[in-house]
View (cartoon, rainbow, N blue to C red):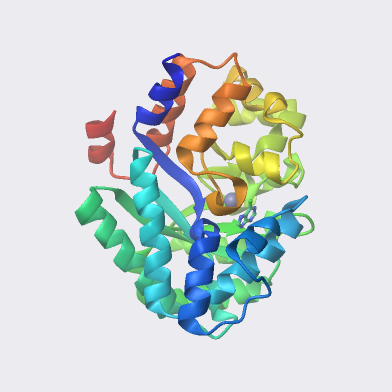
Length: 327
Ligand code: ES4
Ligand code: ZN
């Protein structure tokens, strides 16, 4: 069986990774100790055992608690550098990395501490690993648009250190249109735009992200499968959905990988790419997602793998010159 080796060896772009979701229990404990932060868990094993979420909100509660050990620039650097080494080992050649500044600024951590630590890790990944990488600032949708606007104001002196903005956190009850003004401003600033939609929320949120926010890609978007007209539109317009199979499994978006809508999305001509979302929480990085998905879906083979990998590079926000070199 050569397929697993092919999946691992293919050069891939990671376009849906929350850097705070790459924080492994071992590093959470190390940073807690280093920073004198008390954790409500006795051991790494006890913390890992608490990762028994059933939906997006129960996951997010644990994910935000884990991020509380991040205090200093070195902490953000260590987290991101650990991620880049793992991505490189999975033959990720391009990484577009989400970070959630509000998770940190709300705790009194200055924006510049967060972005400088992450940026230094990007620089090291470029020079030492040859990994092409950039940062994407995500707004937390459970907070207000005013809070997102204030975060953008804080971020503007550092605009040269991130290439786009995204929208994440609790989807239900927080439609994309809530962030219409802040996304319009980001668009005018020349930033790339993306949003989570159609993960737990309805297909209407996918339409809204496209029509109101004018995003270039959709994160997740798997519930688009419920709306044939939307599927047709995604196929015609060539919109890429950044799908995260192990995330969908662990958060109950799908009951098993065997019933994941990926084959139906591909059959409908919708552009899909495969990513890890929050790898420390969902059971694996890029190659683990690819291996588990192809194992569970026997209709997918080498041809689909090559298409998915190529499409991940095509959907990335690198220069056309770099794309030409890769494709
Ligand atoms: C997230 Cl899986 C997922 N969905 C929405 N927001 C998120 N933030 C981190 N992981
Ligand atoms: Zn996500």
